[in-house]
Amino acid sequence: FFLFFFFFGFFFFFFFFSTDVAKLTQEICEKLKDYKEKEKNFNHSESLLNKATTDYGQLKLVEKDFVPYDNLWSTTDKWFKSNRSWHNDPWEALNAQEMENIVNDSGRILSQTIRAFKEMPAMLKIGEHVKKEVEDFRKYVPLALALRTEGMKERHWDEVSAVAGFDVRPKEGFTMTTVIRMNLIDHLSEIEKVGEKAAKAVSYTHL
Image 1: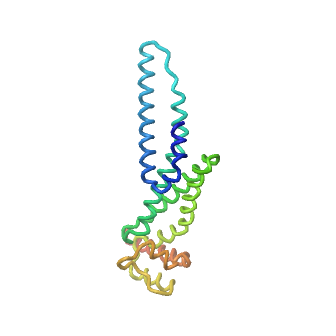
Image 2: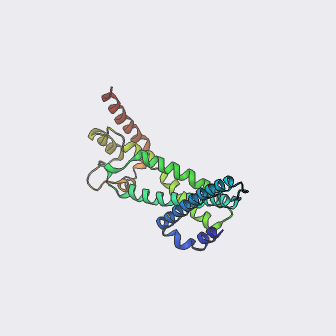
Image 3: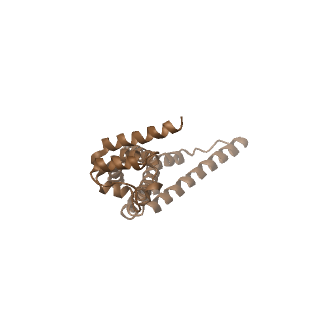
């Protein structure tokens, strides 16, 4: 149970270093897997020697109890890195489908983690904070999917511009941050229709 005291005691420090903590949890997971493999080998050797097999039930409990910690920090690290990338990378590099998958997976895993930490206020607070970030961003996913639809041509961007009331098109420096700052979310339903048109145009060319 040293692991639990370790994470709880250094909560405030680790909160600002999610990548370091994620690496640490991954290392611990690898060590637990290694111990599990050694357990299997030891028990096998004991069986060959007709000896009573040693019970490593405590190791199984530690492995099970550590899962929420690994899920919390690995998901938090992936979320922070992805979110930063989506906001700052060039528009043509944005993978909206991957964004949707990461948002859905992060929300699901964090919900499970929050339930696991309901008796641990410090860890619960971290999970709830990150989960809120995920849910606050979720509304932009349909917008990204529509604007990053394969087949978006100049005429489609003209339509988006007409809907928004000002020029909108992926020029140099155009990113997801630009999309958010333009408040294009206010015109989501109309922009989704433009995306659908672009998608249909592409499907026709593949016939």
